[in-house]
Image (tube, rainbow, N blue to C red; front, side, top):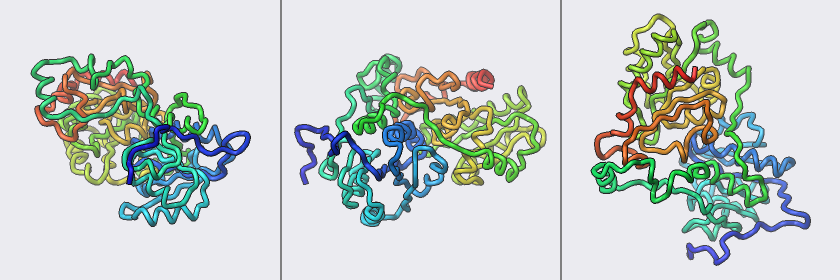
Length: 389
């Protein structure tokens, strides 16, 4: 199969007289929690462009509840981790959609909508998938790729002590205003005539959900301010500020604010969360270990009621910001300019970086001495949290 696009890569969708008027749209959503939150501005712009259309979201079942009550979405279609492309294509075919928008860049996601027989299929032009799309959108000229550094490049940068802030894959950081991943998804919906201007990521939880989660976890009687702590990150250890620093920070802030910490995470983070809980000597009701104990909707409601979330670069970081909760984030192997929470430059948040010349490297594990995150001190994070609250 020829993987190269035609000479004219951006092929306009077929339009009826007077413009494009799809009645039933399906959006193939992204596979990770943080990425899903970053698609919400594009989905809102899509709804703005087609206010009367039925907009369905095809999403991994682990993320299905994220979209409950979301104003951009009419329905969700979920799929299991082991579900094959033919099963997914059959589901989409049954929906009688006339337009599909593919947000991920993978060949599989384009194949799914091609198998469904949907007549108009829009996504980014990428090798091995262009034949599955009817509209192949050219990448933005100012897009910045999250290219992993090699171990040799990392050692060379460290030896030369090159400042990470003057270079980013041969691009100046002055382009960071348009480098954020939010623009990637907005550029796709702009191919359908939607407004490409930034909107803040947005999620929805209801007051009833907030009251229910307070009652379930015994928080309705707590008079102390509620602060959130999220020490995990699924991508890998290169994104995780050391647990000892979380402990020292949590202890100091608890002493200075008399807060109650709510510790979040998945089942894989339960041991680390228990270690944090045990290491912060505090009065009763001053720390709640909720790692592995919440559904996604419960996590959202709990993040909504926190005054601040101290977190690694992670899915819950994006969720909290999209619900209006300020976040404090030590960044190591990743870049806040590209995938930071909320809108770029949002003054509510504190995004902390060290001067490590090899950061961002976008690796899952550090091949040297973890200097990017070790270089962010407890004192600096404590002051950032106190500034926010």
